[in-house]
Length: 115
Image 1: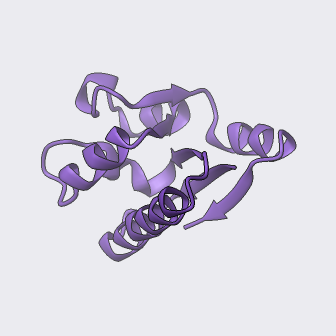
Image 2: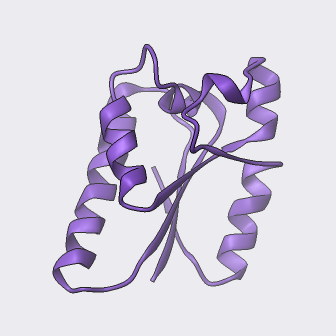
C-alpha cells in the first residue's frame, strides 16, 4: 500500500486532523501487519507544520517520521516564504513542485488523500 497526503492549510485544526488520520492509518496497517509507504506533501500555507520550533506539533511530526512517514515540502513554497531548509526538521525532503510530485505519485498508483 502506498499513500500520499497533501496538505496546504496552515490552520491548526486541519493539521491536527491530518496527523490523526496518519496515526489511524498506521495503527490499521500495524494491526494487520500490512506494509505501507506514506508521504506527506506540504505546500502553500502548511509550511509551518515542518518547523521544529514555534509549532504546536513537533513531537507528533518526529514520532510519525520515526514510523517511516516521509515529509516533503515544495521548493516553490520555500522560495515564496523565503525559508531555508535548515529552518525545517532535518528529515524533511524538498521536491521541486508539490503539484507535479502529487501527479507523479498518482500516475504510479499511489492513493491520494487531500487534507
